[in-house]
Length: 172
Image 1 (cartoon, rainbow, N blue to C red):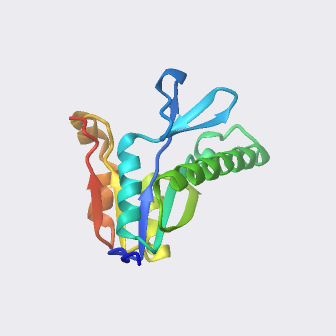
Image 2 (tube, rainbow, N blue to C red; image 1 turned 120 degrees about the vertical axis):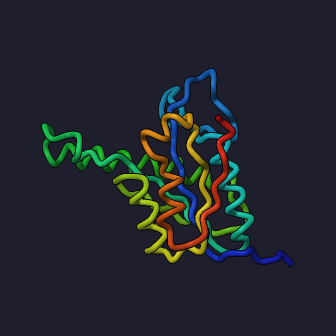
């Protein structure tokens, strides 16, 4: 009999990155078009796997924030903006499904895909779903850049209403 996890519901933010063909990793990359690949970084994989262990027998909620096209596309018609939103949601759903299936064994997987700032989407999802914990990979940005731009991980730690586990990116 499998031992239950420490938490019933663990949330994991997932960020995608366009991947050149030379950098495709079988466990982290998904083909989204004809020779177009998207990946998650190795630390996100670790976050997903840790979340699955912590929630064994429970639920891992993978969360992805898509761009808010209405903020950028002021010259576009609402129909075109809606088409961009739909495409972003469709691709994100496919990518999250594949990545979560690969790395979240032993749990139920739920997806939250919403347009907005990553911080807001993460905190809103944690509150709405009643997350017991958040597991996230720290940004791979250099410390100097984080000091000026602010780190989403730092803000999640300070503002979340549940425990937050942050996996370092391994980059100084």
